[in-house]
Amino acid sequence: MSSSEDMKRAIQRAREAFQCGTTLSIDFRKRQLKALKRMYEENEAAFCSALAQDLKKPKQEAILLELNLLKDDITYILSRMDDWIKPEKIAPTIMTMFDQPLVYHDPYGVVLVLGAWNYPVQLALLPVSGAIAAGNCVIIKPSEVSPATAETIAKLLPKYLDKECYHVICGGIPETTELLKERFDYIFYTGSTAVGKIVRDAANKNLTPVTLELGGKSPVYIDDSVDMEVAVRRILWGKCINLGQTCIAPDYILCSKQLQDKFVEVARRVLEEWYGTNPKASPDLCRVINEKHVDRLSEYLKEGTVAVGGEVDREQLYIAPTILTDVSPKSKVMTDEIFGPILPIISVESAYEAISFINARDAPLTCYVFSTSSKQQQTFAQQVLSGSMCFNDCVVHFSIHDLPFGGIGNSGMGAYHGKASFDSFTHNKACLIRNYNKVAEMIGKMRYPPYSDTNTKR
Ligand code: NAD
Image (tube, rainbow, N blue to C red):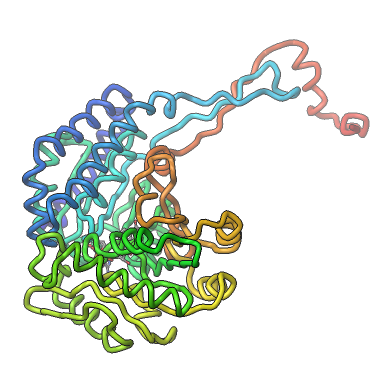
């Protein structure tokens, strides 16, 4: 746990380092990014072990969905950041033909990054590479709910990154509350919508800009044009990674009654093929983060017919991948974000009904549509308001650097990944370099008093 003094000292040191201009050097930023990448490469085993302790995360998921993503993001940023940082020349108009309008890409200063527990390495550190590339100093607060990972980050990061510019603060809600009383130049928060509102309230005190990466219920619509075998595998993979504790996990399915029966039949077979007849014994399934969440999720199982799965072992923090049918849209499983391995199916008769269902609720972080009809795809793209949309697969859009990732409404504000991360942590400072050209001054003279009507005539 970091004390109040630790936090204040860390912020003070970061502020002084920023004011000295340490992070303005592009070379410095690149060295820090390379060191951060080296931290992932040299400590793969330590990170995997922490993730196994916190979530029983399989090594393959830890590498694919946390460490590789972080490394690839840095490689991508390093290959493009020179272009992103360069002041951008704006084409002159007739009024500014002798001038140079420019946009400078300035860092904000000292930024706060608050991570969440479900992908605790990735969510605490992916925003950090964008913040470093943009030239900021960073205070990082990993989630206390995944303590082994928080400790690993706190132990390793100072060994690789500049000790004045970058600091890790450890602690829970009291420490975060304390941190949020301080002034930051930008706050980047990942977590629940409820806490997102607390963060925004705290930021308002200093009019600090924020990115809020929040949650929500990401729907899946399936029509009868798809290859069900492939669709089921893609949907179940998206649901089962991290045992459903993924912000963009498919939350519920909307499809016709006939497709529902087919989905359940294929899903039962696929789950057995992946995890065996006793999925609890499979090394490829994570665990629920804690008992509180097992209890919350267990309640949802009472709200429908368990078509597949349904097993709960509170002591082992285990809930089997479960498909629920006969669920009321008003039940808690259909109003709360599930954030676990339970997948309810709601019957709808048409794409139109599915769109109405989705749009009657909070805008989701992602909307998934399984359909080969481009007309159908276009209809969803135009009519559904969501943070992102992915056709015919789940989650994979997250890994495309050039796709900005973020929510809308209750699922968040702002976006990051690749260039969008750099942009999030950058203030675009408009700048005009004027000239002393005699002709330009002759034309420009009309703005000076004494005013006359002929001067304002067009
Ligand atoms: P969490 O409990 O780890 O909280 C996230 C951060 O908020 C932590 O650093 C924690 O210390 C802080 N915090 C928690 N309660 C607080 C309070 N009362 N006051 C001040 N700070 C507080 O994570 P969580 O909120 O359980 O995360 C799960 C949610 O996050 C889900 O809704 C999920 O969809 C969402 N999420 C979103 C994304 C995304 O990229 N959009 C990614 C992962 C998770």
